[in-house]
Image (tube, rainbow over all chains, first blue to last red; front, side, top):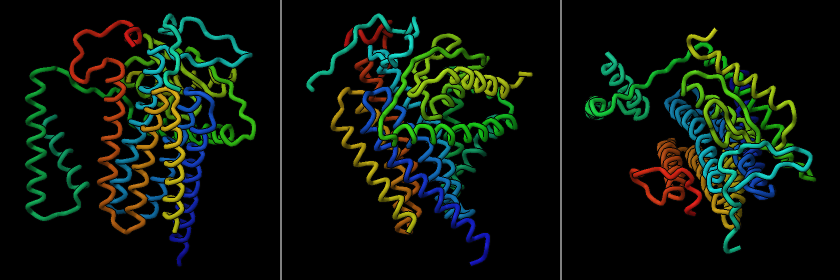
Amino acid sequence: MDIPALIIEILSWASIVTGSFLMVVSGIGMLRFPDFWSRTHAASVGDSGGMILLILGMCLQSGLTLITVKLIIMGIFLIITGPTATHAVANAALVTGWRPKTAEDLEPVKGVPYSDLPEPTVRGE
Amino acid sequence: MRTILSALALFGLWLLMSGIYKPLVVGLGAASAVFAVYMVRRMDRVDQDHLKIPLNPFRFIAYAIWLLWEVVKSNVTVTKLILAPHLNLRQHLFHVPNTQKSELAEVIFANSITLTPGTITVETEGDAFWVHAVSYDEGDHEALADMDRRVTSIETGAA
Amino acid sequence: MMFLVAAVALFVTMVLILVRLYAGPIVYDRVLAVNAFGTATVLFIAVLGFLTGRPDFLDIALLYALINFVGTIAVLKFFRYRALGDIPQMPAHPGEER
């Protein structure tokens, strides 16, 4: 095996293994984090880092072909829509009255939109 | 002019996506590109909504590379936070002013905040965002103001 | 070989997300889990295409990415307004009629 191919092989191994690791970490975070607001951050680890690294690894594996073009289109689409969807979920939660908890040592900022709504209760749990 | 360019762009996308270059398939692609552009022109008579991209492409690419590096750094931070044996979250919802002129640049700024793990744009109001951070520290304001300056500088007409 | 690693990791992630999807507790947790599950599924389909040597799977993955985004937004819009078409007038505080 010549040197450039070996380098590409090593790089794609590295990025795919790191991306897989980040995806599992985001799954663990989804389970470990205590409330909805922190879980959005755990989900965004897989949405940004894991997704970018896995797609980069697949691009390196397929070389300069149409497959790479499709993967890049897919990556750009996911980069744009992932944060938009996360923002939409968080915004919907805020609009219906769910407030994030502020850490004990911090002063909550005044004037949060929709803060006059009552805090909803969890139903059926 | 716009019409011909968008038809060509759609046709190029078709060629890239299909990967089959038989006359029939390429002809179908050309026909659908022309049809899509025709429909879009008909719609344009209904609403006069044109997409303008007031961005400097070279600065945008430089910004994208910088943003990828930020994503890497904050991924490491949040991964450490998730895998730490004892969860020490420091959640906070705070106000981040933005200085972009065009809506597109505002969207890029808000999406950049959300794309970096650890911070999420929750609500936009006027010329400021509400941002939620999972492990807040006082340096976050300065980091987000730096990102805001960088996004503003990719707009055309900016210094 | 490396795609096998990625496929197993994505499968584990999807199972973890499914547990969160079942546990809730609030409805937005579930929407978030569905969205993250969709991203994992897109990558899983793409990896599966490489694993079986059939790159046509990428088209399916691309299509799934499109549907996943539109589906999430549609579900959120339905929760907020209880309607999917044109909204006659937007309530100032949509949460009040919850």
